[in-house]
Image: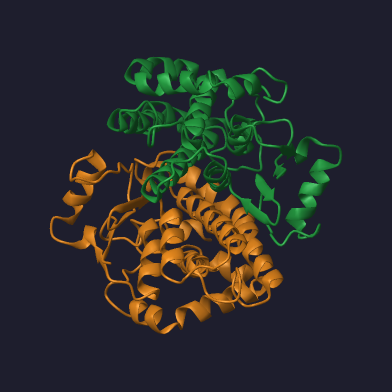
Length: 237
Length: 237
């Protein structure tokens, strides 16, 4: 099975959550948006052309043979459950889905720190509102979400968020910690001591052989100021 | 099986999406937050007390015997798939999950029209930013999302969003149209002619016998200015 991941080239963005699952599982996949004419093929699916029995509003989306699925957290769950990066029992799978969508909420809020008014306009055009929203995010929302993940780790007591082995939600937790460390290094440093288990999980995920190889490869794009996690120093004083 | 739905009393909120599935399916369920001491029982689960092998960050969440799941869209999908309100095949189930999460994105954006800066503060404290964000929502984001649902209906050509029968995502589409008709009646009226299939779906869902009985019951709380969809006339000029 060769998976086809559809996402914008040039950024990690919301495509990175399913991409980490594919990479960590050693899956055979094509990153369609990064191929020649890939963005046009992606747009064709979103227009309803191109033969897909599926009409997504936005990337990322995934083709797995005859199956199609969109929405970052849903794709990551689907792949995790197929590729051995999810718990095996139903109860734990439902817990993983819950945590995965909670991390997706945090990702949305991180995005809205630089786009609190209009996702279709530039950051410069909403900088005052961004300063206000980023302050709330740094002081209350980010600590709330990361503190939640820390409590889940403390409670599970196996070093991972669900069950006893690394799953797709641990990869998502890694990614969100990396992204926040890029966008809000000063704010994250201030609460780091309260998040020992989450940082240990981050290190554990980063040292997995296939994931470490991916992170060192050119396929892992650097964070930049076009994606979700952006470094604007004025938003992280 | 008696399901236990945990959500804040007093608002429809994000609890309404799983609640509509329970009601339409005629399921046996308890709306825990509306019971005596229910909010305290809900908070106990969120604190990690109360015996649940599950730690949600926020309501809604659901108990189904030994199973627990949180996140509105995930609960609705779980219930839909168990209670006959989801497609039966895997391909269509994945499409339904994609659409369900896309509707959840629209719900988030509708919420942020009145809370663009700080979810923990009052609307009055962020009214200027809200006016700006609501304008973008009315003019671009709401038409984009609802136009997407209309195109999905046109393409599927069965009167519902996925497959041939009403599923949990059709109930979610009903709810979001109802909510937007409450919060943005003028803006929605301006694009209504472009959304004939979506409004026909809304009517079809509303006339389903169990759902109609629910909507006429006191269990269906009225929309109000504490929930996601709020009527502030200045945001819908």
